[in-house]
Image (tube, rainbow, N blue to C red; front, side):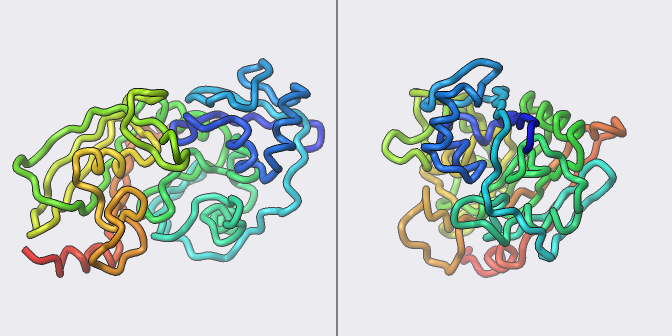
Length: 305
């Protein structure tokens, strides 16, 4: 980035990660390179030097001075986008199953960012750096549904604030193992990273954050239930972890569910159906819904009752 500094604003989905690992994965530079930069104090957290093992938190601002970008440039790719809404400030897309949101080791192409860069050109916010232009929040690779892309920094900052103060409406639907005695319920249990596997989250009191998921039973099957989820908080893998915690894991979840799935699925049956918020420019409430993917509707038709 020549002589400019890169500022990264930490979102809820990134909180809890180790600083050097987060920056290594986000910039494409080696962990050793990042650790050297931290030792040289050319990377700061909230304006002060930080150690490599610092645990990043929501609201942290990481400043990287004169970063040398990873040699592999992100190439715009003509990948079709299912655009649900678009204006001069943002667009909302319906992310398909199997698509990674932004480039990472092993996924340098075919990501949502590659597709968005082709569609938007230079009309993307730069706050989260060259690897994640326009990305203010994420959903898992195998989760489908609504995702907001910011076209400018002002919109990005406004949307990041809304995520931080939980003023965005987010409804998901999913199919889980088992039946329920009650039509609705709430899981209020803190979530943190697993001690043995840092890629997995779990319900824990140690180094965790408050997490609340509300659910409503939409339909019961013989061995499964179709639920609607409303999020009070937005922790990493929140719905998947909370459902596992109450012994109703998401059908198809290869990380938090049973080892074997009775249906041929690629990941969890979880769909980000609705997103709503006060538009940062117009001041009007905007709500967008993503239709269920075909594989999901097919499951609802064939599950035994």
